[in-house]
Structures are given as C-alpha cells and as structure tokens.
Length: 99
Figure (tube, rainbow, N blue to C red):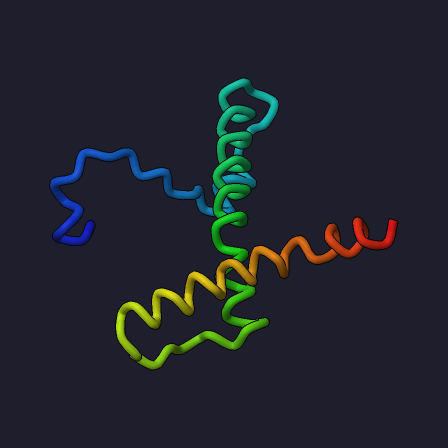
C-alpha cells in the first residue's frame, strides 16, 4: 500500500494511532501509559508542523497557487511562512511592546 518510490526505503513510519484505539488504551498499565504519552508527543509535533499551513491557507488565502516559475513561487512561500511565524507569535510580540 506504500507508494512505489517509498517501498525500498528502510524507515520507521510513525503513524498516529486511531482515536478510538487511543481512547481504548488502558492507561493504568505501564505499556498503555507509555503508548498514550507517545501518541501525545506525535500529536504535538504534528500540530506544530500543520499550524503554519493553516495560517497560510486561511489567513493569507493561499489555498491555490498559480504557476509563475519555481523561483517566484518558492520566494512567495518563504515569505508566507516567515509571515505565518510572525502571525503565530503576534500576541507575544504585542505584549512585549506594551509592557
């Protein structure tokens, strides 16, 4: 079921557990507690990675892109990701300016 280009890659694929399976874990056992903590770590990493994409799509309206050349599109995406970083820390920056 893996894509053809990844079938020969020797890697550990850290796929998130289904929500129902995570809810059914027995967190009283040491193994269940470790698995739950592992899922929490994977979810927190995924949230940090996916949040900038949401900002770019929703706040900046960059859901679809017109092809204008690799250099121009790459430059625009780099700028949008830099702006999304500023957008996500805007409250911290504004609090620092006030006090």
